[in-house]
Length: 169
Image (cartoon, rainbow, N blue to C red; front, side):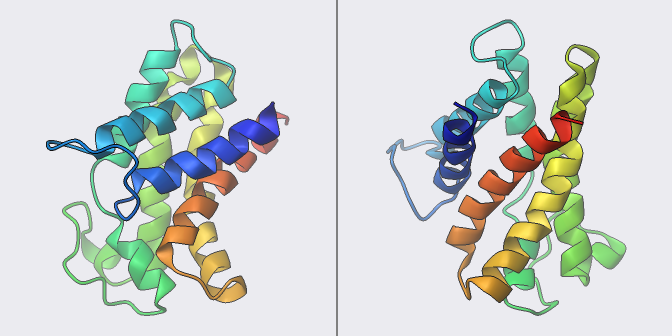
């Protein structure tokens, strides 16, 4: 079941992007994708459908929402020019794409890790995403000679795999 959930996490992260649209809503086509991503992470942490499922889903949505991951594109293209910086990018985060990707990963994982009071394994969401964000880009760039769409798929799979791996410690 775990390999299937890791695969689902990769698919969910990719669907959350904006080039593939499975759902067509006029207002916000990403909301169902965010819900799907949140549920897969909740299921991966053992909360398929219990009282902690919804908080985990909302935490994933909160962490993933504040930005479009401009630094990922800059890191993928090997440059520091990130175009228009996102509102959370200040100081060195405007010019250092690798550092900005790490911080963006922390932003994704932090809300989930704050739920560790209720399930100690959730603390591992923060390092999993902090590593997966730049890691997926670097794998896509150097090993696959690929684009950001595949990097999103990789990010979901890497984050889920690391979450499981760290949780085993």
